[in-house]
Amino acid sequence: MDTAHLVDLLLAVGMVVLALQVVSERAVLRSIILFVVFGLVMALAWTRLQAPDLALAEAAIGAGVTGALMMMAWRRLLIINPDQPADTPRGRSRVAVPVALLAAALVATIGLSALNIDPHANGAGLIALDELTDTSLGNPVTGVLLLFRNLDTLLEMAVLLIALLGARAVSTPAHPNEAAVVETSAPLVGALLAILVPLSILIATHLLLAGTNEPGGAFQAGAVLAAGGVALVLTARLQPGERPGVVTQLAVTAGLLAFVGIGVGIMAFGEKLLVLPGTWAIYVIETAMMVSIGLTLALLFAGAPALVGRPK
Amino acid sequence: MTEILFVLAASVVFGIGVWGLLIAEHLLRKLLALNVMSSSVFIIMLVVAGGGPDGPDPVAQALILTGIVIAVAATAFALALMVSIYRKTGRASITEKGDDDR
Amino acid sequence: MNFQDGIAVVLLIAGCFFYLAGTVGLLRFGDVHSRLHALTKADNLGLMLVCAALAVLAADWRISALLALIWLLGLLAATVSAHLIARHARRGWE
Image (cartoon, rainbow over all chains, first blue to last red; front, side, top):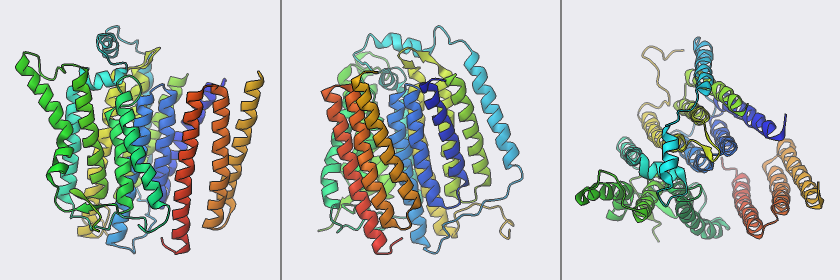
């Protein structure tokens, strides 16, 4: 067994052990933290599978944003009722183990038999790679997301917006200080923010621009931007607001508007629906998507329809 | 070899997720289990799609990327629902009627 | 194995040793402050040694600069988070 396979084995065992701990740990907060670790091991697995785009997305969105959202939700529960037990008893279910074993066996059977199928000579992935040489894009994943299957991406932006609107509809407005976890007066916090927030904007811009040719793209960039927003919310530099202004509403819908605007507007020039007219259109749409994704995730984290600056 | 290993590990993780979903009472734990399940499905999707020397199938990668973002959107909405259920009922679990006195 | 690889291996092993020490400290020490002490000191040094080993292996200025940046960012995050955890622990805040 060579080193590469040893790494695979470590990652596989790590995933299984961490998944088991996530679901069987009794303290909820520990479960959430273990889930973040599970997400980071997943990111390593994506790297091993030569999918750096997915590794970036998993680390930023799967582990980072999801973990932050879960911790904030747990905090909200504690604010509503501070006497809440940190441990949650396991439910009793006689069918749990057999059903889980069956599910695992079913998935393994499907997966292993699908491995034996020879790849189709005209598979969508190969066609996408072929067509990519006609475009100026170097990253095939960005190509698929924005050129070949962009209806998926458009609807994905719609789903993100609907999730935000849905969350807004079911929740009562957050208290201005509810999301601020860190004492605003703590020394070093200001220094950290002074470095972290510009850095998150810089890295997001880099991921966005690099995303056309290298790993990266609007989703990873948006998540990094959201991380900067989360840091500002945690330190109360940004506080939940009650009423979204025009800027917030525009920023949240920018991705969708740019996509639909260009995708439908192009039909006036005799093109088909959602055929993007060139690299500039990809940059415009990706930038708008990054802003929308970042702000939407930050708003979902803050649990508020808008974010406002701290009152002086 | 790598493919088979990852498919097997992901299947086990999927089973663990199903088990966690069934035994969890707290809604937050159910969401964690669901997220674990979706991660394992993504791994299997990528491995099964195969690929060339330049890396895995780009269409599969794009679909999984979409899936990751949809998963976080759905999780965020579900968490908002959970908080609101807790605010109304004082419980972060959904139990059937008559199930309360366990 | 040439000279360059030899240096990298020594640095990697040293880095892993500090990570191991930091983790043992995290698990064995009793209170929050001692645990933070073990984590921040040992792991930051471990990260530096691992980054240095990778820089030696890469033998490229661009990659070395990026690795140095990664170490500095890790240092920044570790410093501030340890500081905040210690403050909360001292005030008995859960």
